[in-house]
Image 1 (spheres, rainbow, N blue to C red):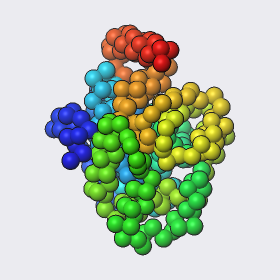
Image 2 (spheres, one colour):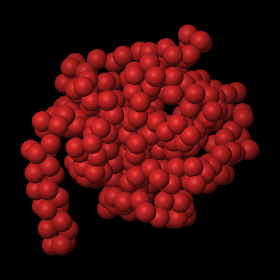
Image 3 (spheres, rainbow, N blue to C red):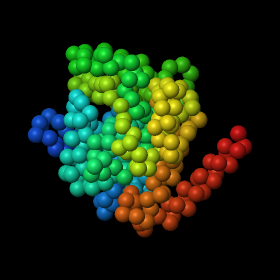
Image 4 (cartoon, rainbow, N blue to C red):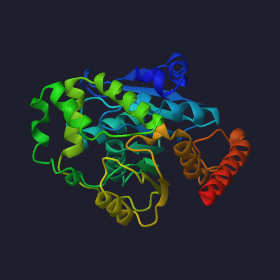
Length: 310
């Protein structure tokens, strides 16, 4: 269904990039699923954290494009964790298991919030080199559901899916956005009750980011100007929280720009990571840098010319 509509590359991705399953907790039921692609010599890769409805493969277009440029990219799917501290502790153990000292994090929606909480959690012994926050937020109270957060675990799967689908765009959409939503609905269907309930709990549990603990981390805020689950107030709060952040605005893209506007998203990711080229925190194979930089500059120039003409 969604696989074929979104991109013919999806089946190629599934057949060439193996899905790994890793347990780092004492509880064997807590399994991290991940795709790890690109050169293993890179010790500071870019890690993707999905939204409530997402699985690791929602970032397949980023994995294919960025590894083609020489980046090491890891896309994750969370185990069932019921609070932010438990998630952060599990994620730290996963990085230890993968022997990764520092990483760049790209977080979409809930993934972005968890990325910020992990940076905050490790601020005394930093593990996060930089953040790309896509359609993300810094305070769970924006969803006005903190009072229901402790009851998600009781709800049946169909009710949880209905809650998530309520945030998906409706009405007329361009073909790419419609295909992106179809794909995410397909991924949502693959999640079990406990996976969904735990993610919604993390999404709505009363919590906020403490900016003074992560103010020295380079941040790019990526958001869209069209309809998304994020309110204008939530976006403004992010800009206030990170006054020095780079801003990557997409005219359109809805909740899932990494699926339906992947070329633009990939370009913004490359621009963000350029600042680390030539350092020990580079996410790219050094031998690929010159060709990749030239291509980014060409695309960037072409994009800016197009925007001037519109």
